[in-house]
View 1 (cartoon, helix red, strand yellow):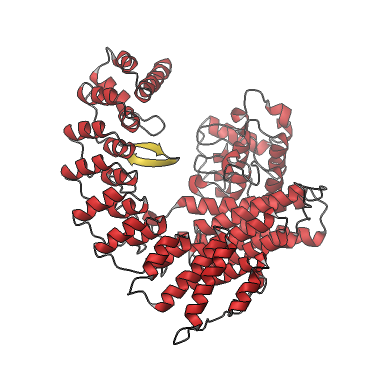
View 2 (cartoon, rainbow, N blue to C red; view 1 turned 90 degrees about the vertical axis):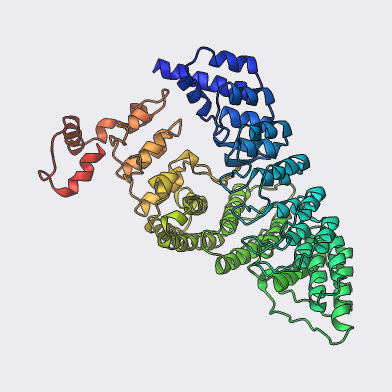
Length: 634
């Protein structure tokens, strides 16, 4: 054990020397080591990265040269690195150096055989990484050495697309001079022209058009013109609507949508009205007229109807709230409910209402948005899960602040339990549909993180409801409705990655979502409520841990949580696959007898099972099959 600990310290020292550009320290760490030992030290990953990967990431040329030329480091061994807060997995050293802009290291790696077309886990090449941050000299060098600029990442985005999106004119111009495919489509159907329209570079847009870029439609039905309107890039919109091939109806839609963007994104009501007026004059003052198809008014939009006259537009300026509803109505008509921005801006407007203390309007808009998402998006969509988590955060705030006199100058009204139940039931339905979809997928297409996130989102909402059942003096009717909803969740018997159930997560500190989770886990309220509706206190995950095991490692274990589990039948002496019991997993500062009296909760059956396991007594076919799992627990 001491030798292994010493080697771990040495691994950490080698990694730190590479990260801190301390060549002297690195040589000292490796001095006198055999080649197998050196290879092991240089291939082990710390925080997901090898010493060579981290040295390439931070531009430590002397370290990189020493690792390659003196230590024989494999220039293709990948690792994980972080750029702008995002973790890049399976990144080759050349990708790291290219992304960070270290031309001298790029040349050194290529000289020693690095593959210029190596890729990360997402199929991003070193060339694409250089295009992302505008490292023009690296782009030219890699292409000279054979880098393929048409290799797309897993989303189908090419080097030209990313250069256009990031506004790197010189790189875009260079790639186009090499005949890069200007109309190449991504997985979702967008082109470099879409990327340019979204990012806002008029200069690059004109360059693309000169090289034959066409106004294609992506999978959302978006043209580059609509994309520029959504993001609010007025110069690009003005340039595109002036092109002779643009249809009149597309020009009108772009101006209307741009006006909506000016309302919500730029908060410029005057400019928004002027854009809507231009669209209306084009719609009604030219032949033939193109009257609006006005949809039925929607309650969530306060029954707002689209205006159809200049006078009505002028009247809107006197009512900012009506203008905001007008923007939502216009956006939904033009983009449709399937477009992410439609639900995004509904949620955005709801958040503004919440900030102003209009929680009823926030809940109304957010409910409309999440219903729209569930009707349009496939189950377990990250967008839908984000909506449910936002609801949990809102409800948590309202529950915490309701009843206090004032919060930042405003009264927070008491929350309606019906609102919480409605949203929770929607989250359970989403989980049910997601579970069915998940079960029908081949193993290679299953993303267990999606199912895990959906369950945790539901549990955050469930936790708030459980507090009302366990702690609050709510009426029996409401209590029954909450327990019925929790029963539906528990009855789905969702098992996520690692084999954990809803009750496992309720007892586990790591179940929270986000930096500021609406609920803190483990939760005694949720644990008790789930047990009340039939959750199995002795369910075991892939490591053999029961909820009681996870409660023990909460550090410190909450005595009331353990007592609730034991009260509902959790076995105190159950052992996981590592032979650890609840008592073994308690921290050094806690003792079993301080939490619970073990003599009251270990019966003769438990003692008999422990004796059988201790002495490896053969019990198959000698006891009823129903007892096999009970014996295995011990």
